[in-house]
Image 1 (cartoon, rainbow, N blue to C red):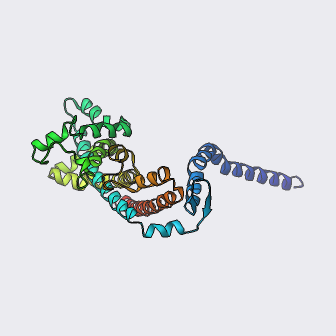
Image 2: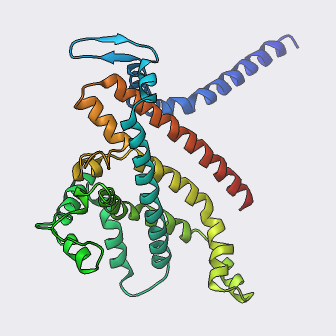
Image 3: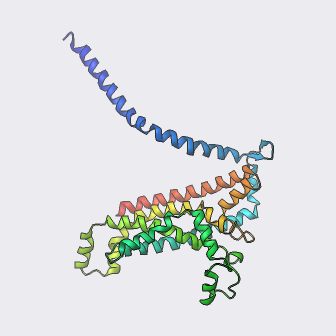
Length: 308
């Protein structure tokens, strides 16, 4: 009995040491990724937010508090950029999603040449966005590009010598069409993977019960796809809303600001007007709007997961 107490204390200390190490061990494995995230994400984010409280000139900067945010309230160009961003995001997302869903449903069925079709469908995702913008700008060029003449032949344009990129009323459709072509593979790939995870027995049981193809899609396929749809729509919305490459390459935000979205406005303010403080404030505004959107979509996804 004299030696029992020290042995019990030693065993307890050893157990606590193992538990402490087991708690710390996962963080040790994650530490390289955490450090990388802090360096490339958290630190630039903090610096960018701090810039939004300063006014920059050619050789100095000064603290202005919320002055940059007050200036945004009377900025008509920013208001138009927000409207353009909404239009650009919603139109691109709508066509990307439904065309991607249609291709995923098509590629989920066996047919001759499916592998070749898959390669062609996924090809735009491998093309750099800058090169995509240059290619589509050439296609819309009224002198060397074919699209203005095709649109004229279809009766959609009255004059083949003008490009839709030079008309403020139609200029946004150029980058939108290019973005639809560029983004369809994302939805096709992710939704096709989700379709492959649906048990075939469910469709077979529904068919035996006399369900029509639409009923099988709406009652079996769609509920299983719903969580994936929500998360892919959220991610793609964020990417489109912050995507400036295609617009900047194809139109530069013109003509007359008709394609000037918030990311393009941020770039122009920071690197052409050299007003990094105001550009940072606009970027923070866009960040806040996208965070609110993401929180709402995640709440919807949790609801859908509970009901599937």
